[in-house]
Image 1 (cartoon, helix red, strand yellow):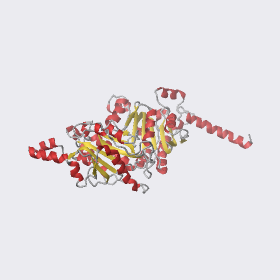
Image 2 (cartoon, helix red, strand yellow):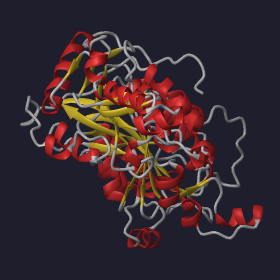
Image 3 (cartoon, one colour):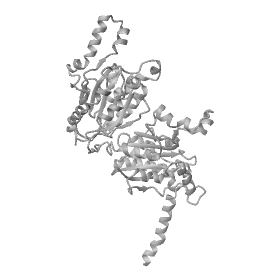
Image 4 (cartoon, one colour):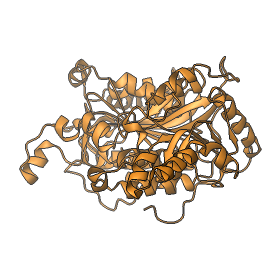
Length: 506
């Protein structure tokens, strides 16, 4: 070894010592306890998210507390960096529960904001994995501006943002979820503004973390989270798959895929699923599985607002967003939850230029006292505004029925920027169904018969006024939508402006 190399020896040894300290996380005992619960540790989560060997860590030396103190904080409880997901670059921040309960220190707070800056600057997707206690009481917050929540708000609609909740997440950290485009919870996860002890102290309520903010609260009831999976590995796999439908950013186009099922085909079995009688329910999910390229259907938020399906898929290898009534759930009537999830879903699809396909089969917006108390009219109005503001390709199909506002919020209004608007031949449309409408209006038998006849001929009546571009055989649904997507090829290569929405949503 030369004298010069010798002078480097001590310097590089110190570098490796500090790297080892950072990589050790909370130490072997805490790591073993964490893994014994069936969870991955923070660095295993990073390795699973990114393609093999592609993860590059940043901020590993950030630590608000010293290595030699009573409470050392390797990487300040946040593993952060970048790598490739399905061959494309992305950024991630992963809370490390084995270090001070995954709490946010001053240094890791800066790391979080640093990642939002990089995501905006390099125009890359950002993934957060949460399992932490929120801000530490010892933080100084001196002169800190802006913070990561401001960064996330500024990123909205510019790059895809995914949040995985993999354990208990409280306070500031949990706020990452509602600011993200897509949120996944595991069965072991929970999130809340304040944990059970703080809730008991503040309002005297005794509650477990699962009762307070477990998956059944946020996936099925509040709608803060979109999808539920069993464990860490499933959540990370879902994040990777979700991102595959999207471009890297709002200035880019979604990647196209090739495969054995991207061509034209008739859906002959559709006639066995869908009865022409609109009173007979069918499962829309079966139709969607048949419609899209094989294996490409990805339902978003299936347990919330279940009368309406929001799903990603591919048609002819192209990413599409699908908004479809499900007549097997409440006849497909749109309640407040369904409208709320559709609004968010369309906002995300519009921001990243995904064509939106509307498959309409509903008796209208949900009626009744419970629906009115839920604010269904306002939620439905928000959904209407969201679909009206879409400037991506809109492809509408009226399948069997659509009454009142239930048709408008599903993009059936003619000349509303649809790329193509289609109908099945046996559809029933109108302000309301014949039975209830005629009774409400106190119509006599002749008037009822005229109303029924007019509704039964709705497809041809509206097509005669160019309200529909065509009336199609249901078996040609896939091919007709492929033709509609082909009509949008003139948009390929055009500059993609950010989705700047004006006005205030209702």
